[in-house]
Amino acid sequence: MEDKPSEASLQTVAARAPITAQRRLNTHLQEQMPVPYLARALEAVDPEHINGSTDYNNNNMSVLQQHCAFFDKDKDGIIYPSDTYKGFRAIGFNVILTLVATVIIHVAFSYYTLPGWIPSLKLPIYIDNIHNAKHGSDTEGYDTEGRFVPDKFDAIFSKYATKEPNKLTFMEIQCMLKANRNSNDPLGWGAAELEWVFLYLIAKNKEGFLEKESIRRMFDGSLWEILAKQNSSRKRR
Image (cartoon, rainbow, N blue to C red; front, side, top):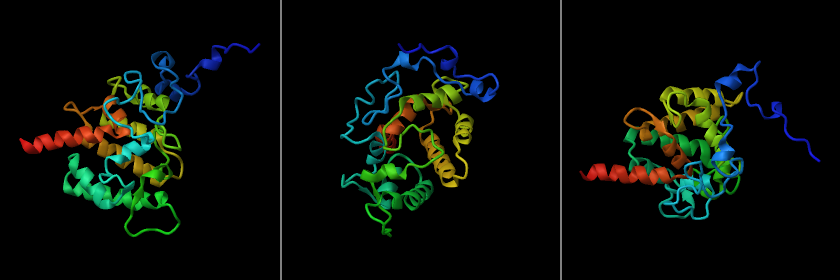
């Protein structure tokens, strides 16, 4: 007969490690949703959306692939710099930020997704291999195969959302990014910083908060469709 877990074995705070009290974990997540430790291949789930984004077709892609699929408009599985440029403009970024994002994304990540060893001057990103471009110093909301990890997603808010439980301020995002940094990983630091700053700029609400639902939909890419429709509506007015 196996021993029952002791109270100490279930503690998430250590008295001599104050940081564990400052960045608390949600100890009730398993009561709020089924198997929160199970990485989901197809859906970005949380307690409010246990089936993910039901209004969004996952097309049998991993959540990380879905995150990128918006930019592959011709559905050939390859994202070229021109595709990224058009996608960023569609969701509302200005020309300068779009150019900066496009150059950084394709220079930094194209090679890791190529099907072979020879670099391509066209700097394509292959969606089938996008998991190879996963960088360090991130939230670990995606696992190394591109699945979505619910308990890591929940930790973003239980640890860093100090003003509002399901929203992040810009400074809370910066605290999170600093805490997630791995040693000797400048590429990961820079990539994470740019990703979250760009997300904050395009998706923050009128009060200056980045809401949990926007972040969840960022993970599965459905946010890009919403932002593109909003941007298109503004242009027609």
